[in-house]
Length: 186
Image: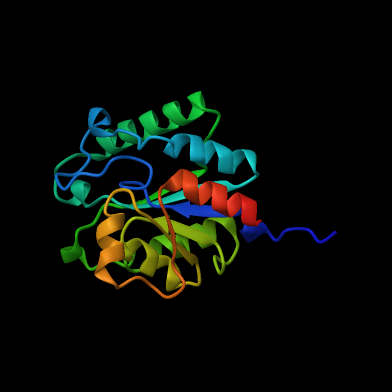
């Protein structure tokens, strides 16, 4: 029996619009961070199937001064607490605090955050699924060989309607639909 390669056990998720409800006004506090129904259970299901979860999220609200690092940490503490209640966990959260004006390499659609995840895990991300609700999420992953998966929560319907999805993007109703599809396929 062939053993699975290490990268087959990693899933990269966007945060806003994939795990939690999104807002054009930014998620600025734990009270505003509201999980999408079934998303936490989907992460737990992936964990139970042996997958590591890394989040890659643009958080330009920090760079815009809408919230600070303490508030971002409080939001992520809420994510960790609620996930633990359903038997799940996230291994790492990578975020870009910059705005477009900063011209950094970590702000999606640029691949810097995804490259950092690859470095952190010591594996190439070629073939690793990246799940997002926007084209910029998927483009960042595809740039380094990740497999694009669009969820129709958050801005997903708008992204699908735009016609600008990377080739071979798989489309799922939500994170649980992705988890069910992905686990069944592997």
